[in-house]
Image (cartoon, rainbow, N blue to C red; front, side):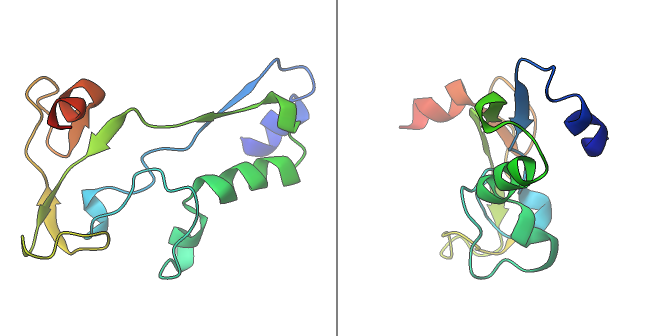
Amino acid sequence: MILRTFLFSRSLDYIQVMTYDLHSYQDGYTGENSPLYKYPEDHGIYAYLNVDYIMTYWKNHGADPKKLIVGFPAYGQTFTLSDPSNNGLRAPTIGAGPPGKYTNKAGLWAYYEVSGLL
C-alpha cells in the first residue's frame, strides 16, 4: 500500500501522514502518543514509532517533501499506573486510564477534556 501511494504521489496535492497513536496504555508503560524523536530506550519496532522516522521514511521513499503534511494528535492518552509515585515517562502501567467525561472511552481523552485540566 505504501509503495502504491508513492507511485501516485506526483499527482497528489498533499499526503497527510498520520503520526499519532504510536504509543498507548497497551505498551505497559507511559509514553507520548506522538513523540518527535526516538528515545535511547527504544528498540525493535519502537525505534520507528516517532514523527522524525516516519516523515524521513516518506521522503526517502520518493514523497515530495512539499506535499507532506504531518498529522498530530489533539487528544491525550491516559494510563493507570502500577505505582502512582512513579509517574514519569516510561512509568509502568497496568492498563488504560479512566474514560473522559465526554469521550467515555478508557485510555483516551479529547483535547477539550485535557485542556480543562491545564
